[in-house]
Image 1: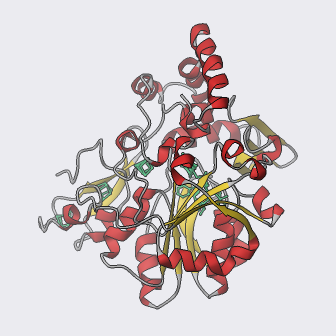
Image 2: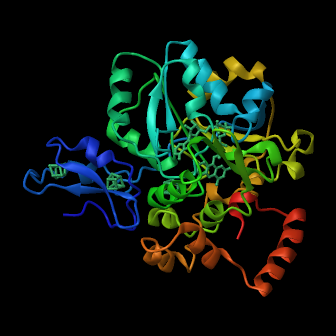
Image 3: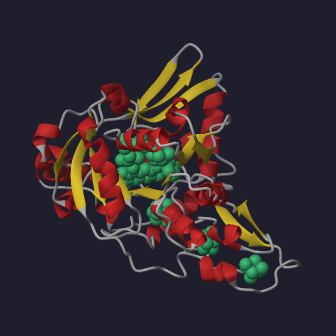
Length: 386
Ligand SMILES: Cc1cc2nc3c(=O)[nH]c(=O)nc-3n(C[C@H](O)[C@H](O)[C@H](O)COP(=O)(O)OP(=O)(O)OC[C@H]3O[C@@H](n4cnc5c(N)ncnc54)[C@H](O)[C@@H]3O)c2cc1C
Ligand code: SF4
Ligand code: SF4
Ligand code: SF4
């Protein structure tokens, strides 16, 4: 029994959480993406999984854009340790100061990416920064519901489909829940990531990984691996794993046909990098990371107003921002090499495969150079690049 077409299933896990017979588990497919598997010996055919799936029951986006902002956290050290302008951390601190609970994605001891919650500011560092891998939702929807029912304030950050999954599972709105998604390029395969990390671990024990190391700037960010006595850092535009991600070779199938692309969101807040800021708000452009924040509800507007003094921010034109960040409204195209890449994954090294499938011909390189010159004057940000 299949709940939804494999190509459309985003792995949000709402069906698993909704099943009254606990007969759904999430298991990795051959490409490493978690998918619901039903134990048919226990299934009573109640249909609740299908009724809950946020893709099968796609809701009209209720949210209206209250306001969009170009924004940076005034705390320079927070901004340095965040992917964009450090907005997530300030909102999370606000929630924690009200005895709230913050859910987000962190690395476990093996650098697998998982959703988890924190209740103390000291743990905020675990959630900070983007991890460009699909995170496992695990038990977090149920944990969030328990906190909500106890009356605790909850901030839940995730991909738009994870927020859709949470809302589908909860079934009703909660005044004490703030949902926060981001403009989402798509999520790479955890299997590719684990294979890539395993190779890096042969060089020594990894202490930390940053997908967005800003020491080379925010526009030309690096991915870095911190070992016991050294740090290995490479520009994202040259790194094998990041190229596989940004060139759309290793994303989940659902990301090429995403049901959650929209200017209007059901989340309270949408975060993003403000790509193209140098053209729209040059006074914000210092190459240290700038956020685009879209406020989708009154609740989020009130929250932002309570902490606005800690940001440098200005209203912005969302349509203009989307011009540089098309992933808000449009799925990326599947790369023609995706199938071949995954066919060879079990037998080959990720670096070797990346060399084979991300290398451009001389003509393509020339075309990119010309496009980049035009892009400089027009639009399209880092994530939207082709
Ligand atoms: C897979 C992925 C794709 C993205 N694609 C785009 C894009 O196309 N365009 C764009 O402008 N921005 C994109 N972003 C968002 C961007 O990278 C920043 O996360 C966002 O701007 C917030 O930055 P910040 O400085 O406020 O907070 P940060 O400190 O960077 O906070 C990041 C927040 O995201 C959560 N998070 C991190 N990794 C994951 C994950 N794998 N799954 C779910 N939640 C996660 C963290 O828990 C934290 O709450 C993407 C992020 C991810 C994880
Ligand atoms: S039909 Fe009902 S019992 Fe069967 S897997 Fe779906 S939710 Fe569970
Ligand atoms: S609820 Fe989520 S995981 Fe389950 S079938 Fe639908 S999209 Fe897939
Ligand atoms: S692109 Fe869409 S389907 Fe893929 S992770 Fe993002 S929200 Fe989910």
